[in-house]
Length: 234
Image 1 (spheres, rainbow, N blue to C red):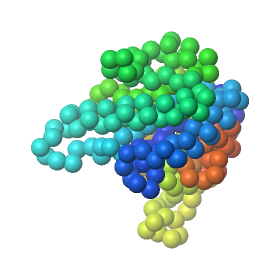
Image 2 (tube, rainbow, N blue to C red; image 1 turned 90 degrees about the horizontal axis):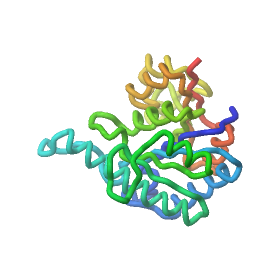
Image 3 (cartoon, one colour; image 1 turned 120 degrees about the vertical axis):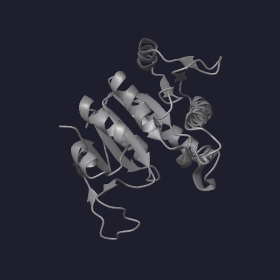
Image 4 (cartoon, rainbow, N blue to C red; image 1 turned 135 degrees about the horizontal axis):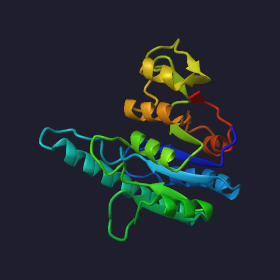
């Protein structure tokens, strides 16, 4: 699987490392090191980051769902600002785009502007989700990947692929080398949420799931060497 333009999804929890909250700088620096290998090789990279290291969605009836989701959007922006700076320190050019105005912190999303950034070797961070409540960062990355004609969405997770059941609960769980997006939907395998899964199916956007903590897993995945599960859309 040779890829020219890839979109990488990172969870906020992954960036927090063993602390489970905030940022673990060594973890983020390692992500930056691996991404730079591919950027230097000419791969165009878009990144979406979840906000789970700061906010896990609505946890109280005292907060309305819309407001809870807005807090989550802001958490993703904080994450992208931090990770962007680590990337810059590692020698990469970066740009943060959001679907709503955010002062001088980010730039308003534009497909034309994002394409210019990619063509100049700039890593583009797509923060703030879709800009609307009730949509996750899974949907956010799928929307942007489809809109920006990405070759694949890469999902760096704390698990090494997609299984037919939870391997933490079932020692006989089977790992898929490849699985169709239709089977993901039918069996509710939860690779991404249902809205994102349907979008991937309708727009033929393949996914790859791999272990973030495996050595050089991001660098390998961006070069098309997936040691995990490929979700096909054929």
